[in-house]
Image 1 (cartoon, rainbow, N blue to C red):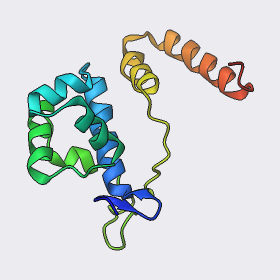
Image 2: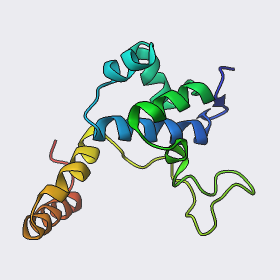
Image 3: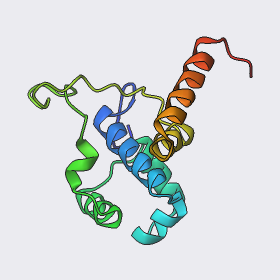
Length: 136
């Protein structure tokens, strides 16, 4: 069994931390190669970190936090409820299937640049498209 993998794949905490790394990287406009160069790693290793396939060591997580200029705790925010006794008080249970993609992250990053009217129009459009069956 590979490190970080359980019967159903990577541990939920490893996936959550990896997803937070991915979201932050994209929101700051870096690609996997940029982050890899900064850490002395390949983009393939960054991919494995972001998927939770490989666990991120404490020292690498520290380096990532310094590169992104965030506190290490950032990567654990929203985790709540995954381990007995580890949930943040009042935090919702961890949902590991949240569809965080490059597109959803970019939408979230760009939305504040829109006027309130444009934000409402974009939201209405997204809601309308989400209610329709796939056209792809």
